[in-house]
Image (cartoon, rainbow, N blue to C red; front, side, top):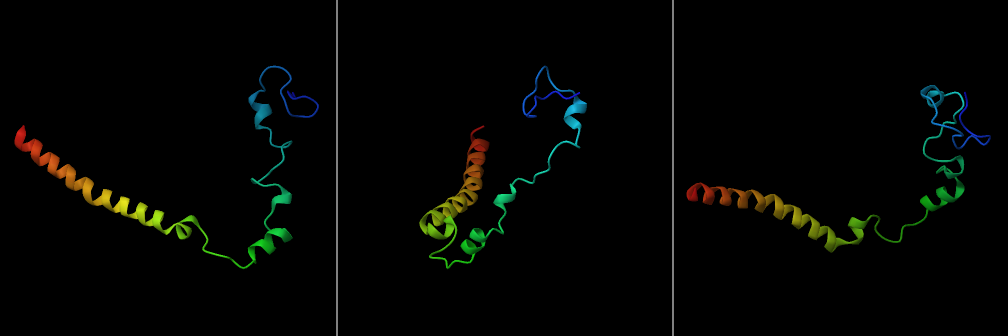
Length: 95
């Protein structure tokens, strides 16, 4: 039972059965890219072999942002346990 129209795109009536959906013989197999998008195309190879004008990656282009993120992580790792410990000590004496 084929539940799609002539072009094979949309169900014609009702929902397809499990056997229709699990039939593997009629489906094409793709791996997330089309044949024309393969990285071995001459344009892609030429682009990959060009001379780089500057650093690659946002972490190399934005040194201040990278430093800020690193310092924020370090401050959280250092101060959160310190503040938690102080709060627990104060609560232990109060309660």
